[in-house]
Image (cartoon, rainbow, N blue to C red; front, side, top):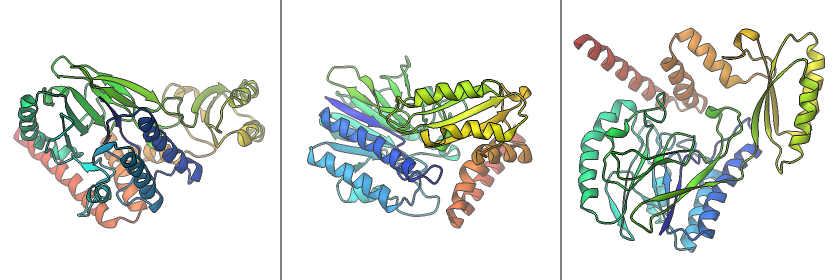
Length: 384
């Protein structure tokens, strides 16, 4: 028996206001679904952040519906939980619930285990840091249920594990129930596969199916896991997806011409126009000449950015010249003004996206929740 573990598809994500980038997200997702059908998997798990926003576009809704319809036609069941991008902060029915109600897919994010083809599957929707303590009792109960089951047991979560990413970590691996034979994770966008001695099976992050703005521009691979549970152990195999090339190059003003010649030849090998970032060191005496060199790549790339990096910052953050990478610059300014990485993350990654979409009520709720976390932290500090 084989199943596919897919996560962080972020359907509806649009980068650079580009229709091509929106379609890249759909293409990667469709490839994961079609590959799963071709390989005759028994079922599919979607481990959260199915959509990029809680109120996705009609196109994103249709793409998911068509994919689930193809699975149904091939007698492949699918199961899903919700990530933070799927959940509205105000009371609203999550869009993926529509597919559950129409029996296109099955929701498993409430912690209630189901049995499918002798496999126990249980999942929990994303919980924010203020809610993490509530996992303790839920994990204890689900671990007891898993211990009683004789076949394979899959736990689906959309949380960060500290041992894998200390900055995005919300749980330690030791917090997890130990009686599962596979831990299908979502939330972290990089592929990771770990085997902890205190857990009953591998813990796997397939990573996102396409690069998003939070990851920056870099040369990387995207994909998903196919997991063979025919035997007593779970054996995951990572399947690479054919995504648009993206890479960031460091060069100097003196070498810019030869570097662009080299890149121009490299780009000819790609089937799709790449996204390129050039980090240029050295003194720029003629910005017009620099821009004319960069423009040689314009027709060969979907987007071509360049940054001027000072000597002092060549190993750290960068000053942005042309064109402005607005997300980087806003985060840098927020961190400088607020004096806190946590506050900058909240302002840029949580509050700003809500306000930019006009979700005033959700933004208000986010501020209230952030204040409650702050207040609780002060109370705990006072007690200690």
